[in-house]
Amino acid sequence: MNIKTFLSPTNTQKRLLRDLIIILLLTSGAITAVTLIQGANMRNNIAQEHIRQSLVNTSDIIFQFYEPVLSNASLIQKWGLAGIWRMGDMPSVTAKLIPMMENLPQIEAIKFGDTSGHSYLLARNGNIWMTRTTSQDAPEEIHWQQWVNQQPMKTWVEKKAYDFKGRPWYRMGLSKFPQNQEAVTWIPPYMFDYDKHFGLSVAMTWPSGKETSEISVMALDISINGLFNNISETRVGANGTAFLFDGDTSVYHPENKEAATGKNRFSSHLTTVETANVRVAMTTWHDKNKPTNAFMFSLDGQAYWAGVQPIDADTRDLWIGVVVPQSDFLNKVQEKRWAILVAVSGVFALGLLMAGFVVWKYRHQLRDMPNRAIRDDHFADDVRRLICQGEGATLEFKSTLRMNLNTDKSDKNIEVAWLKTVSAFMNTNGGMIIIGANDDGEVIGTAPDGFENQDKCRLHFRNLIHQHIGLEFTKYIHLSIGTIDGHTLMVIECERANAPVFLINKKIESFYVRSGPSSLSLSMGQMLKYLESRT
Image (cartoon, rainbow, N blue to C red):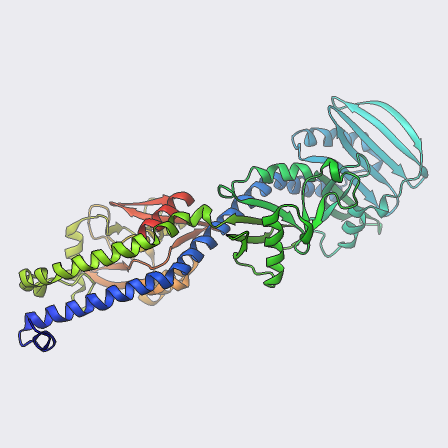
């Protein structure tokens, strides 16, 4: 076949072959170019997700550490508002607090002070508990008492004035009253005056009485080393690092003997942090105007990724950061990049040879091949054909869109069930969901869902897709609604997406793929391997 015959064939089959060859050549070239260009995008997507998940894991560790502290702070505030907390009956209050603190090893002490001049401290010292009280009636006296096995023991009086109102926990806690009365106030790390250790506090306030103008401030102390021990347990990749900072220039670190006498022994300016990857990450974060997404930087010729987020989105007093070397999660992808290109070229070269043979041998079959998509004017025929195929890797039946047929109530779990299948199809090879047919392929219709009309049904469907999968993926999802024998059915056609699709449910992101007739959830490691093999 000379070039002229190839470009201007007179035979229909030859024209088809010519066009197919041209398309394959152009496609192979385009895919090769896109593979090179999109390599950076693929790396960025995987890095963003890895950093996001690392921040989630670190946040969970911290949340598990301080969530009981917040809960008990709120409980003590309720005691104060209910009048249970009375400075005139501190032995009774102490007897209630000691069992609470024995179950909360992360709490070092409970402190209290009010605007009338009363103060109270309950602190642990091994198995011995100490209370310290002061009163406006005797400002030059500090009353101490030991407690053992929840029983009061030795008492003594120290002739010394104590100004609790100048302490950070009281001063900062009082400054947030009354606008922040319902929430805790995080007090940045400072030195505790009862044991000379550094830590941070959560403070809450309440009015001391309806008929007085007095204000009470309560604080729970947390050892900063205890918090760091919990953060150190977080897995941030094979060589990653997690750290705490103040949202600006100070990076917190555990106390150490070398810096024990230093003024800032619990924090360092970002430019003097000893850990090099943390120091460069924080400097880069500031240079990039504090980005909210993961960002990349280089250190000693190696690429790193980092990300930050506040522990509490409302107060933004304490932040967590993670730093991970790129090699932890992209090394294999980069090693195989050229092998993938060679494999793609070889596959297309082989496909080019096979395409001509397939077109010639199966030209009649290709002409008669049915359309996989649902056609509006052949809805009933196309859906019946699909139902006859039965459920499989690319087809699933669901009885309803939202209604639980066992309880006759709308059920969020019913919605999440088919949304999992949608995300799994999009992460694998696409597929279809028929809603209104049970597992046996019996057409029961969508009447139990109780939509007034198709418009409201479509609106509810779109809202669920936007909420749980994302607006950017709607172009891969197509909804058809039609009737068979008087029953209304919905058909959801899902295309394979060109980016990872996550199902968001209760603020948790999950990654699903299709395996036979089932949708499987993958862990972070499994997802990275899957995406690498799917590229």
